[in-house]
Image 1: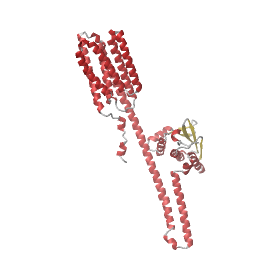
Image 2: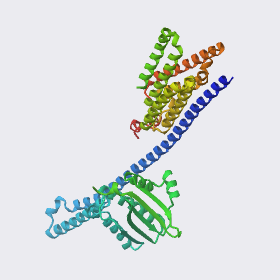
Image 3: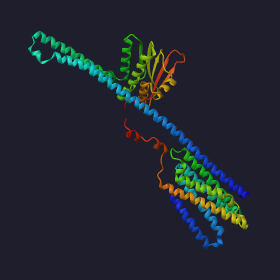
Image 4: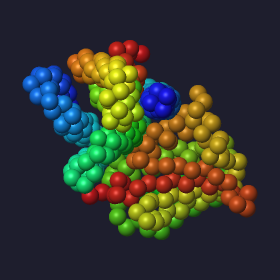
Length: 263
Length: 195
């Protein structure tokens, strides 16, 4: 009797254990699949946002060239037609002067387009100068009080990383200008324990982390998705929060110092 | 590697029948030796099935200690040797099984556990030991005819179960394991469907 029940009990115990392990493992795999699906969807969304933004940028450049540079150069061509040699000297000089003015305007226009693609201050003097320059421009427009302060930026990052961070800051500033109705923006930079921080304060209407995540999952908020996909390249994080005093909104960008500093 | 060990075990299992036929008078001694040999083989199987280095060392150490312990028991308590040997062997096999499953659960393999041949090898070992533990513990009652018949039936059933599991292991080893997660989200889909 002992033998029979003992054998049955041992078998039941062993089979029970194995069945439990199989079911548990299936559950874990199902959970991992769900996680992976979510990650996959998120990546797809970010990729789409990035492609859409790139297309918009191309359209903007194409429109700038077609609508502004095209007519200007066409006008300059009109001034410098073949008939110009048959005209009197005063008219010739006037035409050449006008054509020269138009060509100067075109050069300026193309320079502006080029600067919007890659700010020369950023390329030549680094992130600190480019951000200071950007904030100075905003402040001098008179619509908002903007200031920036870099506390610990002795080593420059790799140029491509600086450009990514600058674009993220530009996008955030753009959002603040467009939606927040703030009266001031203040940017600070600091480092702590091998981490690089950039923090933006403003007193307008802002986002919290929950809003950011909600917008990130929805089809709207293209700029925010773009920010996230850019930061992902640097393995960076972004946090949106409201100040404890409930007066300011804070946006913190956190990056690993090693991944961004130039070797 | 583990399949080669299984093959060697099955081969030695068949050879044991011939040995028993030759040395009919020493059945008890041959049975004891074969049990110890079986434990050693199963320990080697667990060593080859578990990828974790620490677990391999642990199993080797524990099995060696068990063999040394049994050697002492053999000389000190000869009458209890069979009982102690089966009990410690089974206990260790259960511990190794738990270690194997623990390792499998913590590994990053994304395939279902029963699609692995190692699972069936371990299953064969543990089912065999679980099913025959109580029958073997009472081997001293072999003189009882009814018990002897029961012993034969139980032993035969679990030998069949064990060999079936080993056969499944051999069959599964031929098939490449499919990673569920990788198959679900294959990146090539993106290139196949241009937008």
